[in-house]
Image (cartoon, rainbow, N blue to C red; front, side):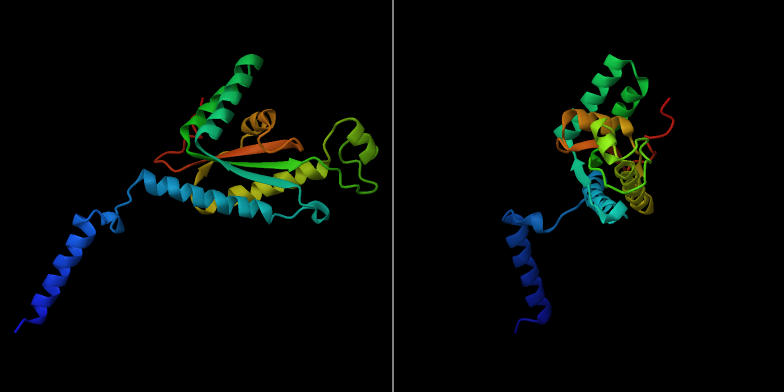
Length: 204
């Protein structure tokens, strides 16, 4: 008579042979260090974009555009930052580009350009929205709402202990490349980092 222990031993051998020796060992995996962190950064970036989306907005008008870039698209942005830095002789563009090169994921937040038509405003420095629009300026509420969304976004990054930096330089490169669409005229980049030491300090 076969004992229960023998039955269990045979089942163990059978499943070991089936899953491991047959090449199906992918059911058992080890995820370590950078793979964990890179996958986690993408999940975090999505949550950061969600926080930006739900930030309060003037007249409830949602003009926000969000994006997440990695790989070649991120490299395009850093290359454009270097180009601006070299052609215009602006050192901090080159410094920030090195930061973008050093990370795997960057969040982009921008605003479409649309005056809100608020009467008796003039916060933009023009008499009214028509004068502002004719001059090619930006509605102060577009700018302010984007700032609130950026603040909401990086607060989530802080809560998750993800190192980050708000970069005008990256946003300017994104606008130049038209990555967020032709109707987006103001933007910021937020590179995200999970390393032993934040790359956004001691930058010179």
